[in-house]
Image (cartoon, rainbow, N blue to C red):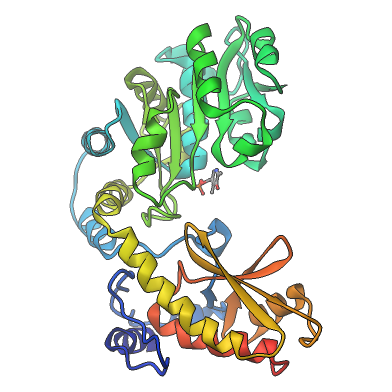
Length: 395
Ligand SMILES: *Cc1c(COP(=O)(O)O)cnc(C)c1O
């Protein structure tokens, strides 16, 4: 109930913020307040996200234009194949890649992309997955790139083959190799860089995949990372793209995208049937891409930097506390303190989480980090007040 009014208040900049009254130039506009307080009815606690659009925290707020597109999608009928085709074409032309499809999150893009490399358009193989008997059945990955989302590859019944060096890759590639798999955020944990890894795939005629899920913003990464030489790449829709939470993108070669589509809904006897995407998610994802390209990210950074300024002023007035600005996609602030503040960073984080309202922050290498990326303007004074209270020992 309060959100609409509080939001408008934030818009007008009347919140008591001293030098840095927040504006809402670049921030998301919330939809009108719902007629029911669903979370309240359910006894589900809401919280302020002063960290990042993590999936466990519900991802990002969608662009208002995305919500509008989703409303349209829910209210209008189209055949799913037609809409899938048209949205895929539009997204591919916006990004400048050969082909694109909307998936049920980046995770399902990983599964469908892997499936595409295994089956192509072969009907019998598509129906047989995750049984890979008689098919290619190995995916090569650098040891340092092993991470939780590898499960999405293994869903297809393949075996992950770990390598470390270029020589290892050359030795590991054989007639069973279905795909080379690279994880952008794990890049520094591996010995082979992205271009070299993609080049190895090309040289040996093996498809290559890169997980670039969290690399937006900036929008340019949608194009840049599409040009690294990988045959397939995925992005998460509900994080930095501010599209539907459960949508994502699979981009790449025409024939592989066609095979990925064939491995999912609306085809019933497929590994991806459980990963269906609704009309509203298709449109929402498309508009998220459009909007991300049009968005003035620098203006948003400046605006959200001023929100940090406001929190900074409060925090710096506490004896023994100092701050450091970092760019964590959007501006963030690390807060350190000496023994004059009788609290560990972990305790500060817990107190912020357990306070009223609950505020989620994170520790970066053991240092408390506050990020204004996902804040609404009206939440800034609250974060400022609570961080101050906690560090002053008045939580
Ligand atoms: C979040 C994430 C994913 C999964 O994205 P979803 O859209 O939530 O499925 C995959 N890979 C990386 C690196 C991620 O951060």
